[in-house]
Structures are given as C-alpha cells and as structure tokens.
Length: 284
Image (cartoon, rainbow, N blue to C red; front, side, top):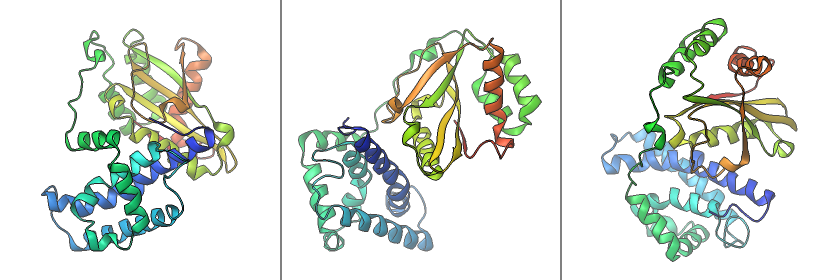
C-alpha cells in the first residue's frame, strides 16, 4: 500500500484515513444500515447522518477541484481508504441526482473504481475474508488471562490493586512487554491531533485485540508533545498487523525484572489518575 513518497505525504495519507473513519463511515453506516436491515430506521438519526455525510463530501469536493488524487500524483492509501468508505454509499444511496452536486468527487471516485487493482479491493469489501487462525492460538496455555486482566484493570484502583494483580498473574514465557514510541514525535503539533493518531491506530489493530493490551499516552503540550507507552503482547514477537500506520511506531522488548522498567510500566498504567501527567489514554 502506497503511503506517499515522503514523511509529509505519509502524514497527509494518515489524516485522510482518519477522515474516512471518523467523518464518513459513521454517517454512511447510519444512513445505509436501515436499508440493509441491520438497524431500525430513525428519522432524526437519518437526517443527521445525511447532512453529516454531505458536509464531509463537500470537503472532498473542494479538495478534488484541481487534484486527480488526494495525495500526490498517484493513488495512495488515502484514495483507497476514502473510496472504500464511499463504496456502499455510491452503490446504494448516492444516486445520479445527488452526484450532480459533487462532480469532482464523482470523477475521482469513478477514476479509482475503474482501476483493475482497485476493482479487486472493492470486490473483497463485499466478501468478508475469513479470519486466519493465528499461530498465537497454538501457544501453551498461560496463567495470564488477558481479558480478565482488562476487566480487572478497568474496574479496580490501578495502584495498588490492578498493578499487584498484574504482577501476580504475569507469565513471562507466554507474554512479553514492549516499550512503544512514535517514530515521528518531532513532527507532532496539536495535542488533539496526536490523540487522534492514537485513536486511529488503535481502531485499526483489529487482529491484535485478542492478543495484546496497550496504553499509549500523549505527553506534553501543543507543539511540544510525544506519544509513548507500553504493550503487553502474547508470545515473544510482534504479531503481524495490517494497520497502515503500524510501521510508524517503534516496539522495543523490555525486561520486566528491571526495577526501572517495572516502575515506568506501572507509571503508565496509573497515569489515568494523574491529570497533570497525561493528556489522553486509550486501552486496547
């Protein structure tokens, strides 16, 4: 998947992926799901969704006035993500009359969907791929039940209760702990944008949810902040991930017996209660 020719283009691509996830898909689903019989029709929700989608499409319409593709001079993951999000809307609800008000967007979309490689991607959208059995499922049973840990962590005081529970149940043979740092912290600007990067990243880690627990924090202030945290992962290696921005994060395995590592790991777990220390926290 093409993420652009340089870091600047990659950042733009990631922003469009977030745009598709946050500004297109929710509105599209609310509009389309009643048609597919997935949810009941709600007039107020329908009106809000159609207006919301129109606003998002208007943004794209202006951007595409003088552009063939969203980022750069060739198809990137930005085009694929946005067009994929619009596949069912164009197929089911955005009729010819509606498209008259979005000529640039329609031209861009038609150009994309007629690319042979892109047709194949869209065909896959209609056929959910079977989830492959992970090799992590073949590992010996572990005394650390990740789902039980997530529930305990969410429902109890972090220090000392949750931290004590974790170390009592931690299985270093069945799990590993990794320090995670965003590779491009020097390029981060607004805190809310850094927060959105984390949210989008976690949303795309579908394959990891069963096998990992992660805390990532945005530390600092506008124009001087960084993303860092820890992951607890089943097994001793980083599992394969399809998330487009996965390579933007550096994973470094750490020694859980090192007192400094344990202290740092615990601080990240407890930071949700230290508002002066953290800005945003996401749990997988």
